[in-house]
Structure formats: structure tokens, C-alpha cells
Image 1 (cartoon, rainbow, N blue to C red):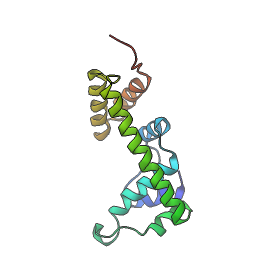
Image 2 (tube, one colour):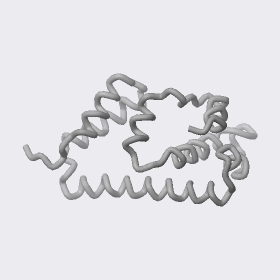
Image 3 (cartoon, rainbow, N blue to C red):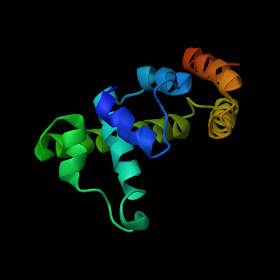
Image 4 (cartoon, rainbow, N blue to C red):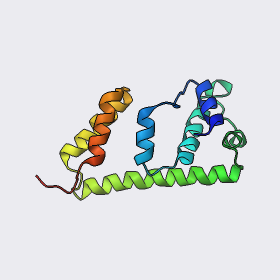
Length: 138
């Protein structure tokens, strides 16, 4: 990840530089590293400046990534579109029965583990879910 972005996030108390879960999930996700950086800057900008009431200027966020405001905005749009498509894909798979009750339950349990920062168990569960053959019956 971009050092300027990592340093900015670290100054806000968000240290993702050596997060093993983030690395695994990013590698397997539909987001690029650049899109993730942009999303993290968007989230972080809400909590910075004027006691959280004022967002950090898009020009500043773009400069942290070393791109123009237009390039930054395009990357943000691409990231949001990828998120929408991922959510719709999960919903579609659940709707047609490809994601059964057991797998859906496991995905929600994994989400809870991630939120609790249970790293070792989360990594094992991520690997299991990723490698799970969802077309297998029985």
C-alpha cells in the first residue's frame, strides 16, 4: 500500500500495515489495493478535521494517493460498484440456494470473528470458506 496513505491512517489510529486478515481478504476480494486505499481514506476522512464534523477535502485525499481528483473519484466509483456487485452476487447465490443455511451461518460467524479481531480463528475460517465447494450436495 501507498506509504503516504498508511502513514496518514496510522496517525488517525488505523494501523493496517501488517494486518494478516486484511491481506488475505484483499487478495481474494473483487477490490484492488488502490480501491481499498481509496475506501479507507473515505472512511478515515469522516473522522478527521473539525471534531469529525468536516470531511477532509477530496484534493487532499487524492494527493495522499498521488493522483488527480478525477482519478481519485473514478477509483472510488469503481470500488463502490465492485461492492454493490459483490453484495448482489451473495444475495443471488443465497436466493438460488447455492449458499445454503450452513454456509450462510458460517459466513456470519466469520464476520463476527473478524469484528472481534480473533485473528487465528478468522484466518482458518477464511481459508475454509474460500476453499468450500458450494456446489457439493449433502
